[in-house]
Length: 76
Image 1 (cartoon, rainbow, N blue to C red):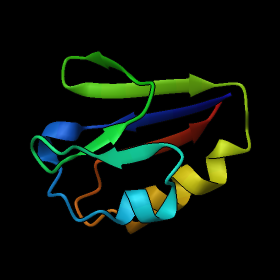
Image 2 (image 1 turned 30 degrees about the vertical axis):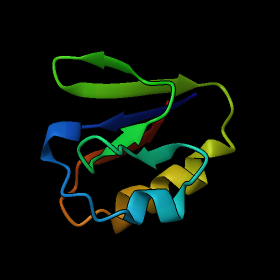
Image 3 (image 1 turned 45 degrees about the vertical axis):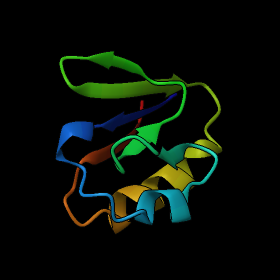
């Protein structure tokens, strides 16, 4: 299982995550911050859990590219 977490309130809107994983991240037109698609929000953290391990590589690339380190990608 893959768990991807985004701490959206610290996003600076650099767009790197969207470039690395366009199927999982989008930029909000309202505030210019990233949105983790299909995520559930809890206390400022947006999380998706997927049994599809294929998403790990793209989301891990987004995590490494993020200059403010607000994306976490884990294999469980």
